[in-house]
Image 1 (spheres, rainbow, N blue to C red):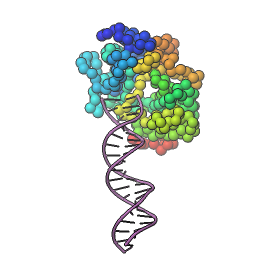
Image 2 (cartoon, rainbow, N blue to C red):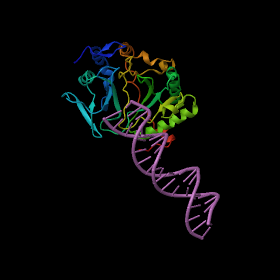
Image 3 (spheres, rainbow, N blue to C red):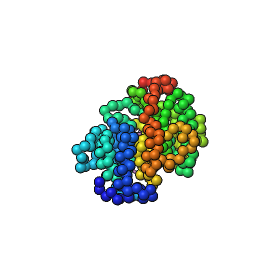
Image 4 (cartoon, rainbow, N blue to C red):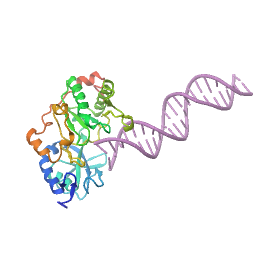
Length: 282
DNA sequence: ATGTCTGGCATGTGTATATT
DNA sequence: AATATACACATGCCAGACAT
């Protein structure tokens, strides 16, 4: 390890040595969601208050224990082991964003709805997301909400095999517009910040081949050292505070509740895709 | 680091009206 | 009847915004 005393999160008082130790604990939870994906990291070499940059191409020198996978001319790191995770941590990679698509296959592993609050409405995000939970439940779909680690919430629906990103895009659009219609004061699908008008943005555009999402259990380059944390729907309905889930608190939570995503059943979307007329789209 | 979407601008096309 | 002018609207392209 280089510079063990470098302060990565000044407000939370986390040094690099602390961070790498936390990564060891986090590894059994984080790595499964990065395995078989193309990894993008966000590196903060000088800590969260200094400059950061996205990294897709594997940096060199590349240790022999690091495996990579090429996609569209980019040589991505394949985060599949603790040594690789610690190597990245030592390089100041504070965020881990796996691709939606898996290495070597073209169908999607999960359907994701990403909900982002507008400026100033952060406090109400859980209540808004509860509505989506109810809607999904009404469709007979079981899902797992997680904090993004920032201000948003992402709803994950693990899938059985064979669904394309094109189908999920149509499905996401359908859901987004439905929510927008049913709760016009609450939700919007407007991409532009100025058009969101204080509403919660239902982002279904982001889920596509080659794109990425903050992994479950990834830390974030936020001053509070928050972590993207799967929740129960009860916690969401109870108005959980995303800032309560961070590097300092995640250990106890995992010890108590384990990985809420691990046992989530894979869902079949055939009926709903047929309903919206996207059953056989590619 | 990289893909997608938008807004604006240039260009093109169509339709209506006016001019001769 | 032919041509000109006007403006609405479609299409194409690019730079910038936005996203993770």
